Length: 155
Image (cartoon, rainbow, N blue to C red; front, side, top):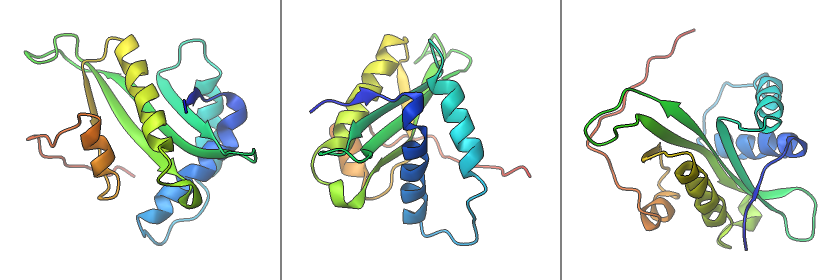
């Protein structure tokens, strides 16, 4: 099985899968007002000839939408001794519908996304892994980083 690049026609399904992922984090107190801006971003990015967003999907067997996806961006940072170009990939929104899991769909999406990063000259790829996703990422070569992560939320 292979993943395919997402198209603008996949935007609604990508937003739906994002909601599946977000709900798995058991966060409360959020509503759906994020969906339309996310959809507009997807339509803009997926409609470009050379988007900064990589998005790969697996169609649900038998039709009826998507089964899985993986998205990522390329970020330009200052180069360093380990990454002279400064190009860094960031993976997010890797999700498979619960009834489609354990079939290799996320692996197919991630493999396609990693190749997309390689084609763009990216030498380092970061992600945040859930406990359930960590074995997949480790099997693809990801390792824990010594760099501690922190976040500032600006409102």
